[in-house]
Amino acid sequence: MDGTMVENTSPILILLGPPGAGKGTQARMLEEKFGFIQLSTGDLLRAAVAAGTKAGKAAKAVMEAGDLVSDEIVTAILADRLGEPDCGAGVILDGFPRTLAQAEALDAILQVSGQKINAAISLEVDDSAMVERISGRFTCGDCGEGYHDNFKPTAKTGTCDKCGGTDMKRRADDNAETVAQRLQAYHAETAPLITYYDNAGVLARVTAIGAIDQIASDLSFVVSKATA
Ligand SMILES: [Zn+2]
Image 1 (cartoon, rainbow, N blue to C red):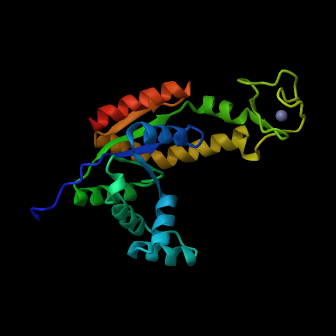
Image 2: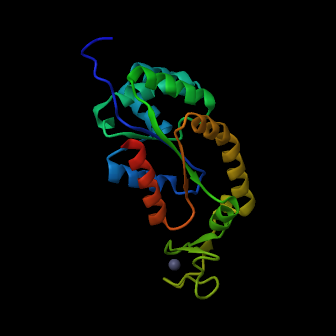
């Protein structure tokens, strides 16, 4: 090995969690508290295409042809990105890896850079609680105030407490059946990754139902331990 090569010891965290579990909020908290950078596949691709790197050009050609960017290209882009100075404090991977093949590809590039995965954190939710939480949401179409059938009902049914408006809106894809289907798809996709990282000894589970501050505090504890 080249004697001048400095090993990259920047922490790598993987955040896993179903849609609606507050992953974005918690990732932002980790960015602020620990100085990490959150990297999502979409952002990575857009930045690499804009920068016109070798892998970025390859990704652009594939996307323009209407095809999915291969794991090989995505990991090449990620490898480039991890070497940039602003990733020094650590990185939170959001939405990658999504498959076992991607997890193995990630391990391969980390082996080259001398890095390791400090923790793969699974935000755990109770599915029925999640269905209740998401399917009960509605907002005032006039002022945008958010409500919930069980947790934050309006004082007078169908009338906004804030502005008196009566045009209450529900997102079509927030109905119970759709939410349950989204969760099932998430579990089917993520189960192999959970097993993979559990076997690697880096899996951490954080309960993601409850007060946001409590979840943030549990998550911070796990991250502090994993990056100590
Ligand atoms: Zn209103």
